[in-house]
Amino acid sequence: EKILASANSLLVTSVSVGLATGLYGISFGALSVAAGLDVWQTCVLSLLMFSGGSQFAFVGVISGGGVAAIPAAIASAWMMGVRNGFYAVAMAPILQLRKTRRVVGAQLTIDESTGVALSQTETEKQKYGFWATGISVFVFWNLLTLLGALLGELMSDPSVWGLDAAAAAAFVALVWPRLNDSPTRVVAVLAFAVSILSSPYVPQGVPVLLAGLVAVVVWAIGATRNQDGES
Image (cartoon, rainbow, N blue to C red; front, side):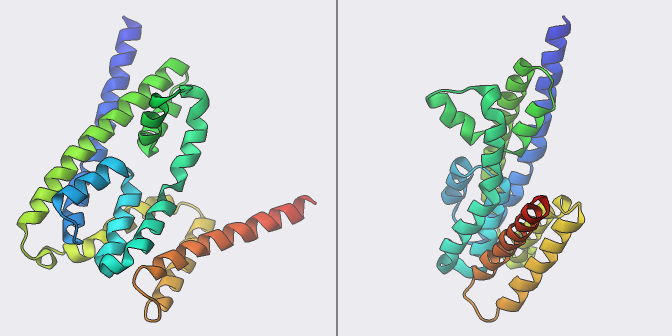
């Protein structure tokens, strides 16, 4: 009975996390349509990319630069999704997936599934938490993305509802809670300054890439100093 109760509790947690995360899909769906994608393009993006931060980054750049900004949008989305690769490294010894299950596992390796899994102390519970949370988020995110896209399509002029600027606001809302220490705040301020100052002189979408390079440069400088300190 204790085992069953524990499994049920973990399932409730996973589904709750999935629903809470999926609700952001409504915003994404509406913002994506406002940025110029149609309902089906929006749904395919959620199905295949399936990374909230990356998706918001993608439509944020598209909304500002249109089709011409697609390369920059892809690069921005990729930079936001890099962290999932680190999650995969942490989860690989736990899940020990093979063949086709590895592909499915990679798709479900996100903040939420990794967080719930690693919060457990037993391997079986970690596996259960990963799959239950990943599947829950995937289902709710995609269903509510469709709902948001349909609602967004009904709005004849997105700017009336503020959706023309909401993609950038949503992206900031996702990033803001991560600025929880001085180094990341410094990087954020420098990136913001670079993007603002370069905007009048470079094509749409490029300021986002330049801002991303700021983080890479700061990381490289920090790594070099650490090596010099150790030597």
